Length: 199
Image 1 (cartoon, helix red, strand yellow):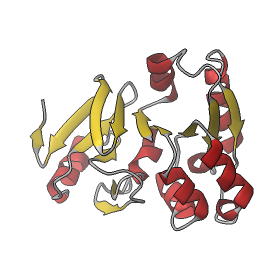
Image 2: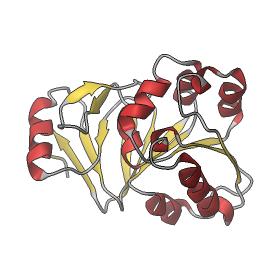
Image 3: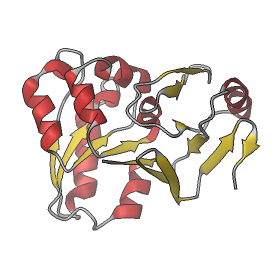
């Protein structure tokens, strides 16, 4: 089980193009439910098309779908699950305490953009930058997306846990395995502990 967090679909494809030949990939556009889930899933499918991956979209957009056994089983059989960008708080509400969420927690994940913020025990609330409760699928770091300097300063001040805060912008990519995080593409990635920036 591994996790990749990419600031954008382009950053993900540019970093891993050609590495998914024959892979069984599921796209979950839950976070894009209000902005175009079908379009978001299609964008991922088209982007992965040249890699030779076998791509299927699972339209898990609400709590009812998150309880569907067939969808849960499909995630469990996937080599890789791609979570599309969008409304992180909606994704958290749909996946929390659900069988589908449990399947995601056990899967190898690619999280695009802001949806990555829900994966940790702590997430950063996009409405004001304060730490709040995440889904606890991954440990070792708190992942967030760029915000105004004032909001990020507030986030760093309020985040008093021991885990580093990783801000992943549009060009950045980070990876996690067994709670250990590493920077894959350093552009647009900033790691801090408290108010101190890591090298």
